[in-house]
Amino acid sequence: MTKKILIIDDDASLRRVLEYNLQEAGYGVVTAADGETGLRLFEEHRPPLVITDLKMPGTGGFQVLAAVKARAPSTLVIVITAFGAVETAVEAMKLGAYDYITKPFNRDELRLVVKKAFELQGLSEENRRLREEIADRAEFQSLIGISREMERVYATVRKVADTEVTVLITGESGTGKELVAKAIHSLSSRRCAPFVAVNCAAIPRDLLESEMFGHVKGAFTGAVRDKTGKFRAAEGGTLFLDEVGDLPLDLQPKLLRALQEKSIEPVGGTTPVKLDVRVVAATNADLERAIAVGSFRDDLYYRLAVIPIDLPPLRERHDDIPLLIRHFCGKHGGEGVTFSPAAMEELCRYSWPGNVRELENTVARLLILRNGDVIETADLPEKIAGNVPSGERRIINLPPDGYSLEELEREIVIEALERNGWNQSRAARFLRIPRHTLIYRMEKYAINQEETKR
Image (cartoon, rainbow, N blue to C red):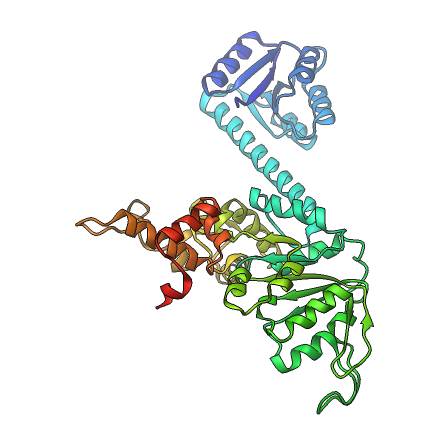
């Protein structure tokens, strides 16, 4: 879209010179011969930039400046003043003018001032947009992202937050599954009650049942007093079961019963305890595959996955990387630090196997080790910046004597499945194909996880 400029000057010849030079530079120009007409045209066109002479009969430049800034504070105003009257121009800048140019001025000086004004306006607009995005995302805790993939996540969270259904959050490690669970809790009517997290993979197996359901005194050696457990600690609130795919098979029926009956039975106890707890679970494992091999109960899966939310990996939402980097800079004390365009391009191009967690750690490290307030490509870790010129990058290195297309397709499908932990839905998204197409290719080439490992 052509940027529009309003020129207000009572000198007809200067007005024509300004109009010609700015139109030649690619701008759209509207002109007025006096301040009153100029303000009327400003209301009609609302240009982002106004250039006005200070000395005009009738409505002068100071009045124009005051009126424009009162009606549209974000509009930039450049004032024109005669040589030797710089003090007047400085006074105008104190009142809100962006810059000034003195007569006579040359074409290059005019174009440079206008270009810088629009660049500043672009930065201000971006900062405003980012502030609005961050404010809009405040309800989602520290979830950051404006990509279509994340918008779908936000939409689902809003819909399910204030319900009682169980939610299963899937996604690779480091994608922010616990943040989604916290967002669901904070948007629900349970927000004032506890949010209790349990990492099913981090607690020793022989302690996990007691940690989750509690125990009574004397239930086992060392049980010297009653223990309430995580379920009862989350009473009235939300219990988050992280890495639920690692839950031992013999504990799964007890969790299923707790979900169905809304009650638990502590270890060593004989009386069920009624509870009011909403359960949200998460896993980076392919539970459908786990069901197929017998390590996860299908009835528990369907009870947990009433509402599934699949978090996309960072490599599928590169549009979010600049926003995340700014967020992490603020979080780790780098508010004034910027990234060069080349460095930002490399960061956006990297595949981020560790997802958002890896990106945050990288930003924190760059802030600590930086040499100045601008992060350059040379400051990036070698694995991110790389040492292969962009013109020599290749996705696939084919042998000089050729290769079977079918064999190549088979290897690509296997690679996509392995990268995504053999989760067919994520692998299909990675390949940008429908899931049924992926399944067809797997059947066509006899691809399965067990055979591939051999």
